[in-house]
Image (cartoon, rainbow, N blue to C red):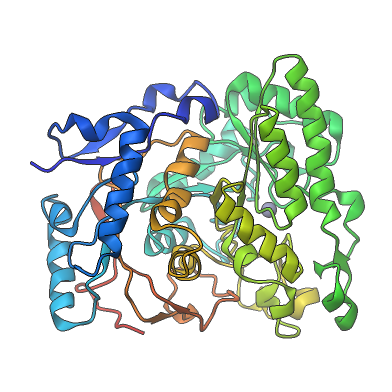
Amino acid sequence: MTEIFVGSGDADRSSSTAGASRDAHQARRVIDTAGDAGRASGATGMARDAGRASEAARAATPRDAIFANSLVVTLDQAAELPFAAQAVARIREAQARGSVSENVAVFPGFCDVHVHLREPGQSAKETIATGTRAAARGGFTTVCAMPNLDPVPDTLENLALEEALIARDAVIETLPYASATTTQAGAAITPIGELAQRAIGFSDDGHGLDDPDLMEAALREIAKAGSIIAIHAEDGALRPAGSSINAGPLAEKLGLIGIPKEAEYAQIARDLEILRRLAAENIFPAYHVCHVSCPESVELLTAAKAEGLNVSCETAPHYLLLDESQIPGDNGHFKMNPPLRKPSDREAIANALAAGTIDFIATDHAPHTAEEKARGLAGSAFGIVGIETSFALIDTHFVETGGITLERAVELFTTAPRARFNIPARAGDLTIWDLGADATIDPADFASKGRATPFAGWKVRARCLATFAAGREVYTGVGSPAEPGRK
Ligand SMILES: [Zn+2]
């Protein structure tokens, strides 16, 4: 028997998790059993394994490219898993034909804590069925769904509507957020204590939470419930009406109203003051900042971490790879909130990723209809899709270039978000990738209903070959049922 662990190192989990309530579920999951105690012996051993495996994964001796980071699986080993055997056989056939490279790696299923699946209420943009299929195509086996829905999951009753759709249509693990305030209106907090039993966390994503007293009340409840709040940091008073892109040279040139980065980091700074006051009372709510877009935000959070506050942040591939200088005129596919900032901001965010001060990657996958994204920068809806392109972009532009290691990249998509949000890896959640592909991002291939991406036409080296959720093949990138063909 082959021993294959899917799961994250436990070492730092207890200190970084959202709370104790889910600790019962934290046991490392094992797929396929047998006892090599050495491999299970905690973070240090696993880190060593990760180093070895990534050397092997990058070695020219191909075929059984390997990944590690608490998971050590070769293609040979994956073939021993009954649920994966057929897919591995198809991949080997494709390798023999030359349509898949010899550099194939098997990873634990990816986890994205920030996606918009648009159901209930906005199924013209996306559905749980299409959004989770898109996620599987991007290698994800767990997504956390943001609550800007209709109805907003702000009560158990409303949350139940979303849960029923998830139970019916999701092809991967889909964990809903509840909103932090009723209808996300920022006027009254939701019943956080009871919602925390069923929601992965709380967020008013799409809006800042401007009332400091309400924020403090929410944070106290979050701490009590052992949950986590995911913040869309944006001070409404610093965000001019009608603003659409970064306040900077491009906005001036195009005559558009800009969104200053102060709107983002000023609200973080305010929240950190609240967290410091709570810390003085020995209250440490888990506070996570979504989609940071400027170095000031990262610096504030890094300092707060050093003080012992329970804070973290994510960024998205577009803040790492794009800035306003790359916006090709009045194109709504480059519009999201926070907006693409200046080149120096992008560089600083990329450096923070390499330095480890950004905790993990999320996509902020935010699908809209084609019409909603065709109204130029001023008129288009905020948000781009990203779940089908994120890992390929990070692998191509950070791993291939030597900015970060492969094992760090995979950690950013697996153990890091899972540990922070207390989401155990599941047995049978795997994704298999060709890391030597010659692919082009083409929105026409997307499983998502949303097609608006600023990365259309970008070349990538990584392509998903198969994804399994709980032992079921939920994405097939090579072989039957239909070989999509290489691009
Ligand atoms: Zn947001």
